[in-house]
Image (cartoon, rainbow, N blue to C red; front, side, top):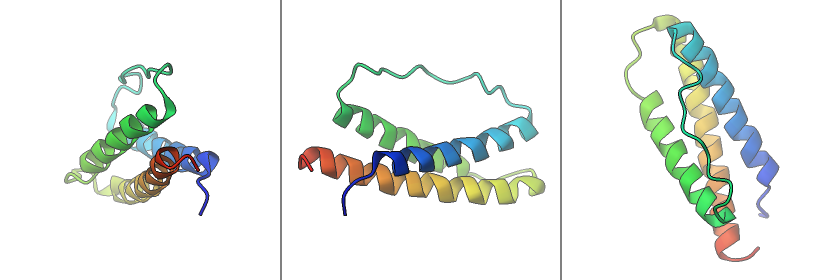
Length: 98
């Protein structure tokens, strides 16, 4: 299977949107995030993205106090998992120059 960068980006965007909705409902600051280093080689950026996605999955998997956010949380985790799989495919493609 050939890696499709757009499919990975779409999965990440879906996860981000679900997390934003949940954060807004929890009254969290959406502007609180680190800058991205766009000068890093693609393979390095993919590894950093994978680390960030795994951290996001871990954060989202923590117990939720708000029962109304359960659906948002489940959808966000699903999208994060899709993004993790897509990013892992990208890393494999970059390592094997596919």
